[in-house]
Length: 72
Ligand SMILES: [Zn+2]
Image: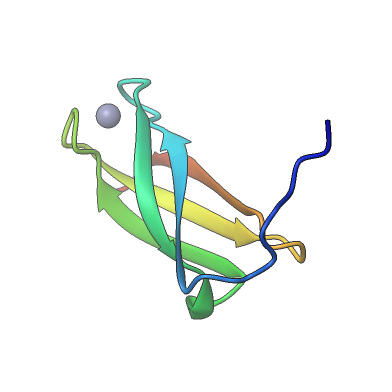
């Protein structure tokens, strides 16, 4: 029951965050070559509210994304 994981690093991976306003899960492309800690503002495609999105790229290549709340 071993799961094989590819170690190859893609420049862009998909991650997802949960919208802070409408609660929908939003899938976003993350450019991992842009740094292991990223922050940007993105409009939710569901409710159109701009939010601060934070990205963390773990040393094992896992990407975490989350909403840091509504952006001003
Ligand atoms: Zn939303």
